[in-house]
Image 1 (spheres, rainbow, N blue to C red):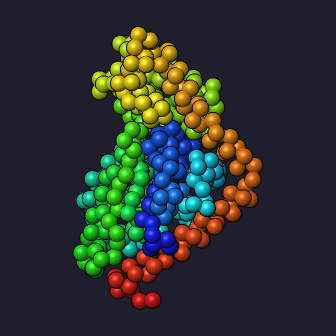
Image 2 (spheres, helix red, strand yellow; image 1 turned 180 degrees about the vertical axis):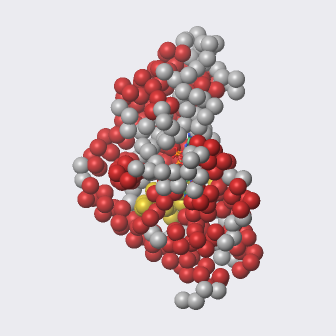
Image 3 (cartoon, protein in one colour; image 1 turned 90 degrees about the vertical axis):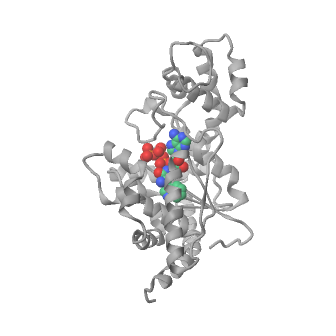
Length: 333
Ligand code: ATP
Ligand code: LTN
């Protein structure tokens, strides 16, 4: 339960399954940074979720350190929020096991992310991939979070979290706060640059499909130049123009302009000018992130210290809920 009782608790997480993308930034991390001081905020690098698909140990280790630094570079401030690595707070795994007894096989089988990932990683449909949403429910419920800011793809998981909490509360009495999902009006689902019918994803095999927040300016410009559009050569927002609409969404999210204003701005101009403008807006937004990241990586001891302090803060906040749940279930202390 919140240390600062005057503020609502906000919780969110991101997997260190690669270098964060523009989709992660616009759909999630940017909002976390903007909202962090308005809430008792916790942000978690969910390494235990990342191992539900096979990870090379050296790469995972590097992605965790870099991921932590990127979150700080995006503006998450360890003084204003609790920023930590999931596996450093064992209460997440403990609560996850307990909640597993209140999640049904049928509801877990309906999760789209499970269905997608079991298709994509057909040779490794492991138990943790299946129970992934139970661990996510534990992440959220452990802190009695009221708000969960995520991209739209995670809405179903937050709804399942509410269902698990409601079931538990129904059996044992009020134990968990029911969390609400929050996503941005523009940018809640950024699509792949190469296949705009697919979500932009950091674990995509083709780096041309995403912009990583650490990509250098010339790489960003090239990726936008190669982004899939259509043959109409007119900047117009429409479901039958998914590539152009996706680029417009990125531009809208960065410049706070609406679609009509963007259409007017590029009236009579070709896709070349439009892509250049979008790319430049992205480069300018990410430039300071990259700079701060490089500074932070110069000082790994400081990063590790932030990591460990964050975990200590989180572990304290997690304690009361785990204790309450074990008591309610009937385990003895
Ligand atoms: P992976 O490719 O490993 O599945 P991912 O890129 O989908 O990873 P996550 O770590 O699963 O990223 O998600 C972190 C946060 O970013 C979540 O809140 C998620 O909803 C959001 N997010 C991920 N991809 C996008 C996207 N393309 N557009 C908007 N938000 C996104
Ligand atoms: N499942 C999420 C990451 C995640 C998360 C969470 C998000 C794990 N635990 C708790 C919000 C709250 C994802 O794949 N993006």
